[in-house]
Every structure is written in structure tokens, then in C-alpha cells.
Image (cartoon, rainbow, N blue to C red; front, side):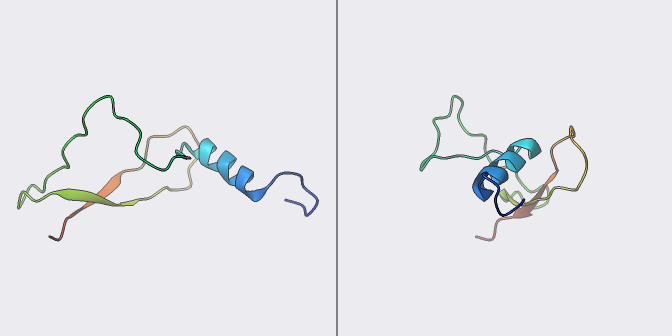
Length: 76
């Protein structure tokens, strides 16, 4: 991007996010849900709730499947 470019960095970030399929929300709260939220997945060994820790993207061309989510047992 040249120094005299008329596009702002935020606009460029938004275009990249949209091209990667990421969602960009400009709201302060939660959007109304048409269906109730699904209960968190449970650990097969102990039965505890799991939560998403990391979602990683690898550098592959689009279109592709969404990345796998890594779950960890919640420390209560």
C-alpha cells in the first residue's frame, strides 16, 4: 500500500477479513438468536464442559472447509 493511497488500513483489514470468511460485528451486544444456544460439548472421559481455546487458520487458498476447533476442559 503506497503512502498516497486513498484506502484506509481499517478498510483493507475489513476486506481481508471478509475474503477469509471471518465475521466482523459492529454491535455492542449479542444478536437475538432464532434458536436457543446448544449446550457446550462434554469431555468423553470426565463429562466436564469443553470450551473453544484456539481456532487456527492455515495458509491455503479458498474455498476450503472451516478450520477445526481445539477444545479444552474448563477449569472450575
